[in-house]
Amino acid sequence: MLEPTPLYGGNGAYLDALYEQYLREPARVPPQWRAYFESLGPRAPGEQAHEPIVDEIAARARRPSASARTSEAGAGASAKQAAVSRLIQLWTNRGHLIARLDPLALTSRPRPRVLALDYFGLTDADLETEFFTGSRTDAVPKRMKLRDILAMLEYIYAGPIGAEFAHVSESDERLWLQDQFQSGRIRQRFDPEEQRNILWQLTSAEGLERYLHTKYVGQRRFSLEGADALIPLLDDLIQRCGSARVEELVIGMAHRGRLNVLVNALGKSPSDIFSEFEGRYDLAHQQGSGDVKYHKGFSADLRTAAGNVHVALAFNPSHLEVVDPVVEGSVRARQQRRADTRGEQVLPISAATLHSKARASSWRRCSCRRRGASTPAARCM
Image 1 (cartoon, helix red, strand yellow):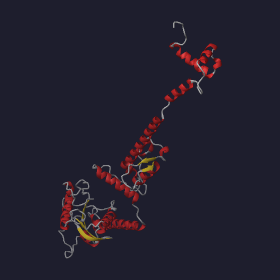
Image 2 (cartoon, helix red, strand yellow):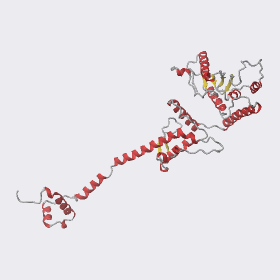
Image 3 (cartoon, one colour):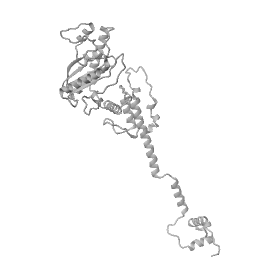
């Protein structure tokens, strides 16, 4: 046991290297060591040098695994999806800044940098990749290519209509406005007959304002100019209410545009309007207190495809700010008379009250909703 031997632990690395060389090239091993390795017995079939295998295992350990590569790819895809979601959100908030509101293109509207792809870390290479849109409506697919998403956002928010609703503080109202605007822009298409009808109504609205301005120069009339689309909008609303079996509409509105609504939406005779401008009243056919013409109300039965709808435009009180409560009270009385407990037969339209001596107020809710009633007495616009 005291006889010296080279087979001790300190020579382990040397012996391993020597055996590796014996496995590869036995002739290059010193004769005494070759004889020793041969004395250990015949080599196992297929036995190979261990060093290349050990090196390969070490190299594989240094390379990232398939799961790590998958995780990195997933993280990259998540970052891209987050960027696309942010892009869609900014388009909904800022898209109105580049809407084509000037048909003559007299002014150039600079494109905000926050609407560019590179602002979100996206490139043209991502245009053919599909992403989730986060859509809440059926009008917008749940998944789309980035190229199609951009085209859709451009069409909805940068078209001839600008929608600004990000300032609405109540989340449900803001999201409802956004969804309705998106669905309307994508689904709404006017056929030629509808287009001619809208043009006719717009022409009638502009023609009345131009005639009043020419015939009664200097007289106060609170022109509708600049908001002529109110006339076809009201007409469409009334037609839709008729299809929904609404029996009565009560409208509360500001001074501005009232004369045009009276003539072109409710059918009041233009000669009566002109008589009021000239200070002539036919007391045998007209009733009232002699109030100014832009305070007066009117009512008429308007024809719809599903039957007549009674539409009443409320008189404006001397304090215009209270016209909405007046309308709501009138609607509640009409509902009680009809036993309309679900608010399906009488509809209030409470427009924003605009007045030269008072700031604009927002669209108001129905009084029953402010009181927190479980069954609202009317649906508000």
